[in-house]
Length: 134
Image 1 (cartoon, rainbow, N blue to C red):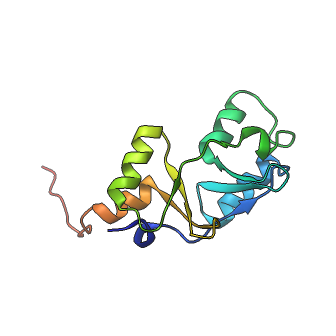
Image 2: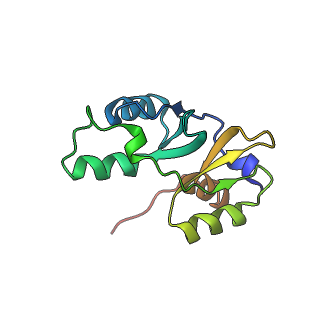
């Protein structure tokens, strides 16, 4: 199976000046765990994940003052839609992250693939069953 078959095509794109609270609200509303941060001044893409927000809040940083740009990972590994899920899983495992931005041939983001997406594709279909407890 390929990344294009598993990825989410809902790509939330925000700017580096969004606050962490704004980013969290947008991510929650779209039910995604990561946002692509597009910094037109720096001419690049980064990623802000729910974990980045959690770490900032855990450190006592104010989510209304901290910006996405300050907490964005800019050293990003991008996936191609034609990658296998094994290639994506290997990149995630090697890099220690849970999301990959999927880029098309024109250099634009076309999706995000997460560990959850890969597991969903690899896991057998769940069947409803009851368990007897005695």
